[in-house]
Image (cartoon, rainbow, N blue to C red; front, side, top):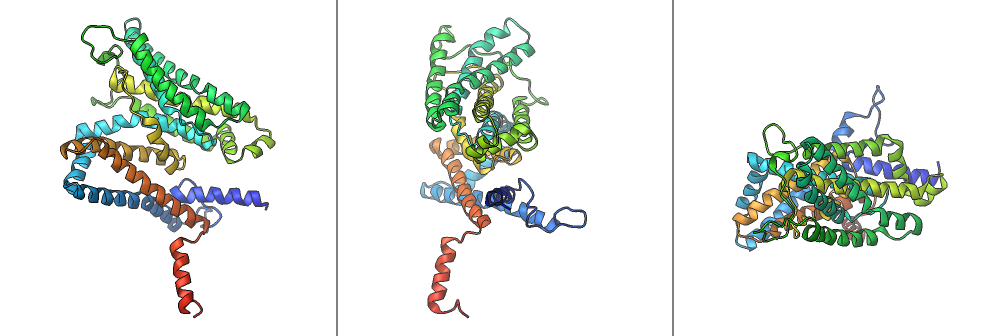
Length: 404
C-alpha cells in the first residue's frame, strides 16, 4: 500500500473514532455477520459522550468560580439558565427558535469547510439576506398570497447570499487569493451595505420611528408555526438542510469531489477534477445557506430589520462545525447546546445583575474546553505521547525504575 493511501486511511479512521462519524474497520474485530463488535461500538459512544460532557462540566466549574469571585451564587445562576432554556415551555420554544438560523449557517459552513474553503463572510451574507427580505416582505405581502410571498422571499435571500460570495470565489478559483481575507472583507462591506439599505432604500418613513428600520411584516404573514407554539417551520428547514448537506457529503459524487478538494488541491487537479468550478460551486452553496438563514430569521422571528441589528451568528457557529468534524448529526446537537447556553444565559445574567456579555463568556469557555479535549483526543488517535507522559517517563528513568 502506498504511503499516501495509508495516511488517508488513518485520517479517515481518526475522524470516525473521534465523534462516531464512521466505522473503524481497520482495527475492530468483526463478528460472524461481518459487523463490528458491540463492545467497540459502545466504546466509541462512550468516548464521544466524554468529549462533550467533560469539557462542558469543566466550563461550568470555571464559570462557577468566576461567579463566586463576583459574589454570585453559581447554583442559582445555572439553575436559572437550565430552567429558562429547557424546563420552561416558553423558554424551550425560544431555544428551538434560536436554532433555526444557526442550523442554516452551519449547513453552509459544512459545505465550505469540507472542501477546505474558509468562508468566514457568513455575517455579511446573512445580513444582506435579512435586509432584502425585511425591506421587501411587507410590500410583497400586499400584492401576493402569503405562501407565494414566503417562497419568493426565501429564494431571494438565498440568491443574494450566493451572489455575495462570487468575488471571493473567483479570486480563489482563478488567482489563488486567500479566501479568509476576501470573505472577511466582503462580510464587513455586506454588513454595512445592509445597514445602508435599511436607512436609505427600505426605510419605514412613518412618523415616530426613532431607530431606522424596515416596515414590519404582519405576524399573520410570517412563517407558519408548529403545533400551536411559537416555533416556526424555519427550525424544520434548518434541520432538513443540515441533514441534506450531511447526506450530500457522505452519499453523493459532489460530496466526494468536495472532500477530495479539501484533502489535497494538487491531487484533486491531477485526478482530473475541475478545481476552479468546484470552488465556485462550493462558495455559491455556502453563501446560499447563509443568506437563507437571514431570510428565515426575519420571516420567522423579527418581522423587520433595524439598521443597527447584527446578531453575528456567522462566526460563533464556526467552532461548532469544526468540533462536530462536519458531521451533520453532531452539528445539530452542538447547535442545540449553543442555543441552550445563549437563551438561558440571557435571563440568568439579567437576574444575577451581570453584563450581558457574561453569558457569552460561558459559551466561550465551553468552546475552549471542547477544543482542548479535541486536541488531546486527536493526539491519542495518532499515538502521540503527551507532555505529561514524557515527563513521567524521564522521571522514572532517572530513578532507575524504567529498567525493572
